[in-house]
Length: 156
Image 1 (cartoon, rainbow, N blue to C red):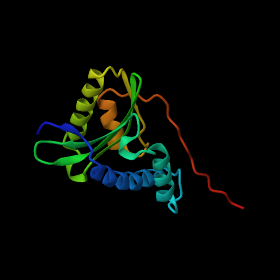
Image 2 (image 1 turned 90 degrees about the horizontal axis):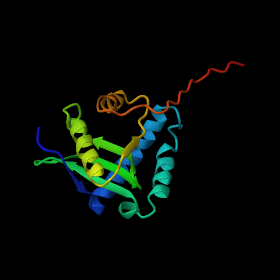
Image 3 (image 1 turned 45 degrees about the vertical axis):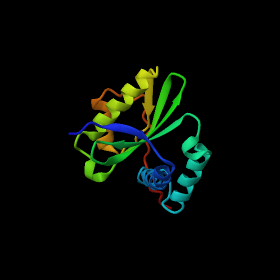
Image 4 (image 1 turned 60 degrees about the vertical axis):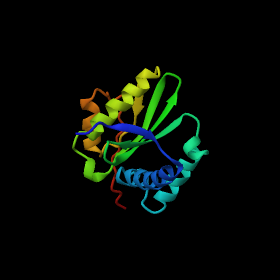
C-alpha cells in the first residue's frame, strides 16, 4: 500500500465534495429512519449551508483530499476547536474500501492533529454503518452514547 497524504481541498474539489456529502448525509439519515426520503437532500443541503456559511473557508472546518502517490482516494472533513476535534466525514471511493486506506487515513489525521496540540477526536457514525463502526473500534474509538429507535406499527 502506498503512503496516504492529506491535501487541502481546492474550491473545485470542495464543490464536488459538497454535492456528494449532501447525498451521503441524506441517504444515511433515510436509512437510519431519521428522515423521509422525500426532501432529504434538500434538508441535508440546508443543514450543510448553515454549518458552512463560508464554504471551504468556514472557520475551524478543514477539508482534505485523501491521496496516495498515484491517485486521489477520497475526502476528509474535520472541525477543530480548542484542543479537540470532530471528524464530520471520511469518505473513500468505493474501489478503495476494505484495503486499509481508512485505517491509514485515520492514523495520518490523528498524528497531524496531535502535532497541533489536539487532545481528543470525536465522531458520529450511523448505527447501520457496521464497517465504519468496526474500523473505529479497532483503532481505539469508544462509544460514548448510543441512541436507539424502534418503529411501531399502529393498527386502528
